Image (cartoon, rainbow, N blue to C red):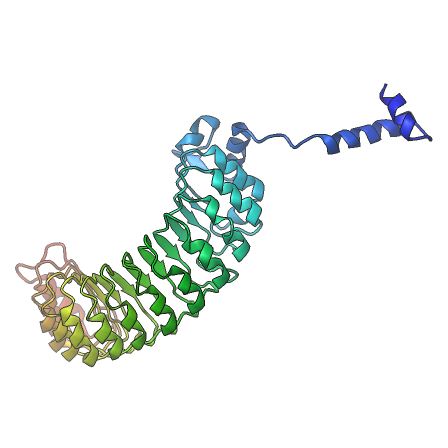
Length: 388
């Protein structure tokens, strides 16, 4: 029968040729086989996904709550692999860092993962077209686009419109001040990271109305001290990272108004003793990093009255023994004084702090004899560790 049908359309009919043509036609006409849970389990096992240290199987697909592919596996993922994630009904966190071959259409398949709340796409050649499919994932709260230069300001309205968004990382992307306008007045955003972007003082103006913001990172940006003024009144800001920036004593003045601040990472900035005086207002401060700033012994006096301060880093500053007296009555747990002028006398002052468990003094004036004397102090914290 097949040969007769083919002969009607192929005058120079030969049985073998007809059979080949028929098979090709059938191959084109047949739809791709639907993916199954067994397919998903087999493929994820190939990709080294494990549950309780065993390769994932059909019966354990529902146990997968988080996925993370290493740098060797991630570039191998395809659109079809993303589609298989719909067989992971309890998947909440997906770290897909380093994707190379996944298209926007492929990424859109994550809309079939009902419990997805965290999506990391670090270094994944993500573009604005990929971001355009995000509305299909309304439950995602945490987005990480770090090191995706192809993500630009054009993607920001779509990202900002995600209804559950609380944590957004845009480090080393193409986002600029213009793109940040889309975030103005955002109602749910708690953490925003803009490090290594082209963001400047003008961009921070758009963040002033995000009253929910608790964490902000502007490390390695063009932000200056004056640029901090718009965010100084944010009522819930608890963590500010501005390392390797041009923030100066004017910026320190604005930081002094951030009374809810708990953690301040300000190493390699232009802050000096003149700016330090404003930090005396930060009664909730628990952690401060001042490495490679212009702070000296005199500037440390501003920290003396902070009742919750637990961690102080002063590596690479001009502080010495005299400055340690300003830290003596604080509830400190960790102090770093590497590459400073602090010597054995200053170390003895620190070692008497009863709550202190760690002192790092590498490259300082502290000697082995000084360490021995500090460790021999009666009443020191028995868990104290000193490295030099």
